[in-house]
Length: 410
Image 1 (cartoon, rainbow, N blue to C red):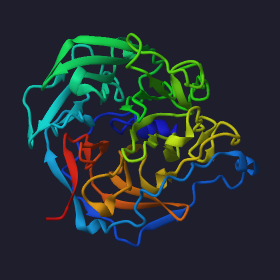
Image 2: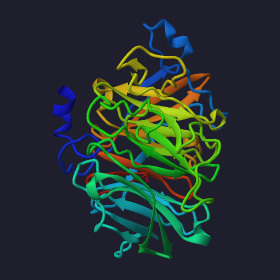
Image 3: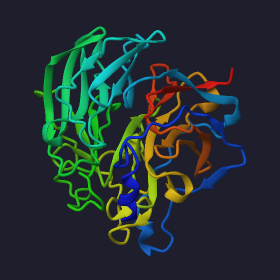
């Protein structure tokens, strides 16, 4: 009951009501607060030798953290309605597309927020639950030619729709919708919602376990259901998509064992997949899947919460998180981020992620075979999403309606 009582008072990624936080005071964390640890292990269980630790990434990562006191999260926008995703079209325009949870996609271009939405589907988006709404956006790799982009939203009945739309310039045709998948949701929460194109050109979709507490239907470990999974769709072949022949279970499922993967991203330099998976009562986790791993990864939920036993003892073949933090340490709901690949070389290869409830932002790197996670910033706002522009620079959005960019202090 403790988790449920907490959820009742927290907005978006937890399951509570909406509060409007004050404008942030961004406080860098002193350099002394460094945590160095190997990939997490569950010490009390002898079977852990058979649990899979993430393969080490290639040497495209920073070997130390920059001094966060020399940087700030600069406010670039305010007044949005609960922004939950930030995406570029990767068409050379430099535009950012920002999802407002009630069903609008806004365009930020040349330092200005355009008045007319890029897409407005408030007439079909169901935002009745706190974790419902328009939740994810991805642009087709050939967007410049075909104008295709994809969204993930909850519609009538609260069920998930993954749909394709078509656009031209700064305007999308709301009547061009083609629904790829309609996925029944048993409860209002744990919808996931992130979309991303992988280095293979396929569309990846993150779905939560369907909601309520403790995965009551045990969807996370059931590979015949699409809930609690990372899906992989070939949207280039088939009408409107086909299932890639090398998907491991003969359906759309690519990876499984997830509770509520709130934001996923691919490292643009390596093609590795990063997942922020929201925990249950105690642990929030960062999951890492190197491009070389392939399909069928099992991230453990609901057998495990993070690297700790939940339903039962740890089992062989499950992926341990690259990093985790307890609710006592830093918040209650992870927001997955991006690997920095922008113009500040000292940040190159650092995976930035945060917590929705506490506003903390961490960096994660691998040095000499050890994952190192450092608390970098105290933002003072609820972090709903991170984003990355065409140049590899990093942003985050908050439930207060603001968007912020990581920049050097001026």
